[in-house]
Amino acid sequence: MMDTIIYLIRHAETIDENGIRNTNENSQMINEKEILSVQGEKQSQKLSENVELQKLDAIWSSNYTRAKATAKYISYKNNLQYNLDKRLCERKLGNIEDLSKFMNDKATRDPSREQLAFPTFKTRDGESANDTNKRMNEFISEILEKYNEKRIAVVSHGGAIKFYLLSYCKVNERLNLEYKRKELDIISPCLLKMTFRKNELVNLEQIKW
Image 1: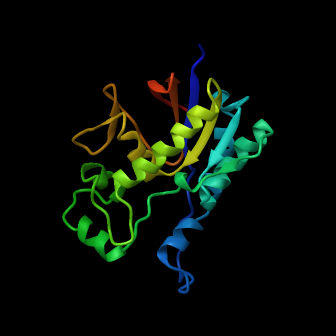
Image 2: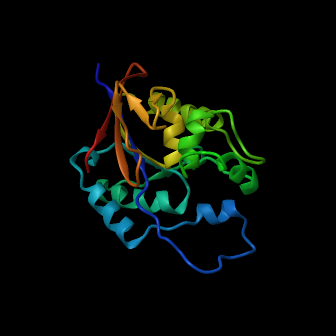
């Protein structure tokens, strides 16, 4: 029996912006529309040329702009259309005031890392790490069923990926994820290769792109 391979990808670098954003849009809408930087576009193109991402059977992406912008290069290289699923979207931050209070006494400035240590925490109208883990697991389970013994690329987001990996990884004292004592670096972009056999994860490795 052959293995099923899922390449779990965090989107490339996004652009920093100054100035006043559209005040008619809430923070969630603004978050969904963030675009890649020039460097991010270059990263996405280079990532798509990685030998691991050739001759794929399917490509799936979050419907956020930055994820689709990353997926388009992989799609072009493989001559495949990418598919969208909202379960791959970043975890919903919700109320910013609630998030600020949560982060007030934390050592890092990264809410997604802090939520690894507090997986049940969520803001008003937001999602917890556990909430995100549940929907990501539902999606991956469906993918494993649909694409048995195939190779699939899945483009998602930092928080969503970290919270999904709570199913398989340990959170160390630095609030980073470890798989079999190897620390993972979930940066933009990153490429993780997950090998499943009979729907069971048998290996997880970070691929240099």
